[in-house]
Image (cartoon, rainbow, N blue to C red; front, side, top):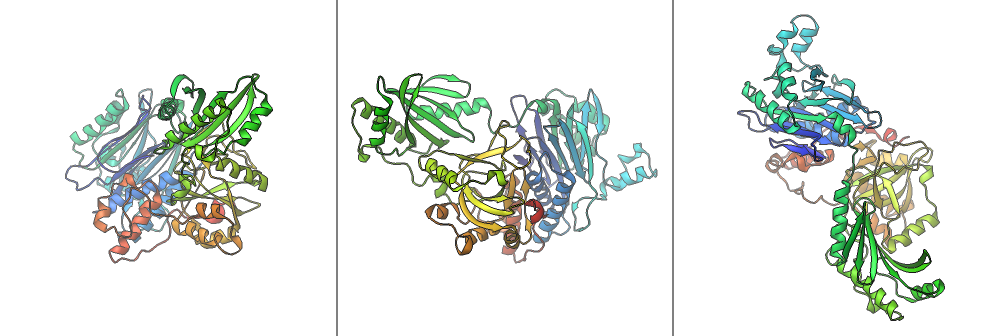
Length: 614
């Protein structure tokens, strides 16, 4: 996700730039209080208000909340209303109860090929098709109300003093549900989302002309510059999307060329020579061993080192392999292919390779090849130093936790889970699951099974980066859309079960941030689950559970919220807070540091029973 709340521009560029956004600080303004985000099939802009600090915080909270909760199948009116609740709560916590924000949000449904636009306030959405501009939104302000009532004409609206008086917005100290608009359109033409800094300076005819400029970057820059030249002093933000080009582009975790590039880098790091590439597969040679490598998904390298054993009986080869010490880097196997008996060392690693890991893998492959040539049995001491044990994803303290979902069809038996563990001990990943695309390696996941089970049964850690694969179909009691993000997990650790009623009690009846693929769990909720499954009737057994079920730590790359002052919060770039809960966590911490006790409920107010499919 790309999020921007300052005057610098951000680009989502697939080589053709199908979406582009730019935000510029208004003349004489102390800071830019606009925000915007560009994501896969999701675009939005927000205009914050509330004086010093409040406006920037309000737009940042609105954008973060919408980004976290939106999905192609989401109810956008509910998402915008959730943003209202979150901005309202953040204002109470930050001692800025009147702060608020507009929001205009567009989401494309890749299966239907349509776009829905929802909005609150006077930020607008337009679409330009065949040179004709159509305004999709209606301003929530006094000027528009008087036009609708026939008090003023359409020509008088632009310069009417009621343009600056909003009748609906997110937050602003009002507990009432705001007015929220919703429209749907086909994926055709250019979509424009903008704050009122643009429309204060330009009329629709001017916007149509400039939006037609070749190149999204040039069109966006031209619009912002023209608004300033026309006398607009407000912060100005635009996001432009080429809907027809976006329709041709499906979301991917990385493009094929990028996947191939990091596989080639890994093979080269092994000291091997790349002999050719075939689509997403890299062929290589390392000494007497040939091999293939590819990205298994989520930047998970799968590399096989093959050694032709020549004219030998398969049973003899199996006996030789069984006499060897267990591989410390992967799985040592033997089999037949086209009448040839082959020895294979299979290795999987999350990229990029850790320091020294490539040398250990290459040395072990060479050790087995030399031992076979000499027909001798290796001693354990002959193998190179082992990799980190347990694998590094388990040595990290998790920084985020997610509630993932399953159905009866995805409940595994004891033997299946034992097989997953055997594979894991050899470095092979056997469990993948649908996840939110915000998940990161090392995150803790709790797997909740929906009705009729209604309970958490497993815990695991995310073992790879999320990846998009439209060919994978989730095992579920009902058909799920193929537009899913996946990640490889550590073996499933059986915990509990933890029934829905217990989860509701721990979460205080509310869970925050349901997104496509899962629900974000607040640190205090996940930590309470860790405490529960570590003792009492829900406790599991063994060292593996202790490695998986760990309390959450502080997120890397961000200052410590417990020691961070309000002044530091003011200078923290909004794009560093990638989740809605980051914003809320820092607001609460800095408010407490300033002597103000946090008030209000939790943002992301969706009933746990509803979220969990009860």
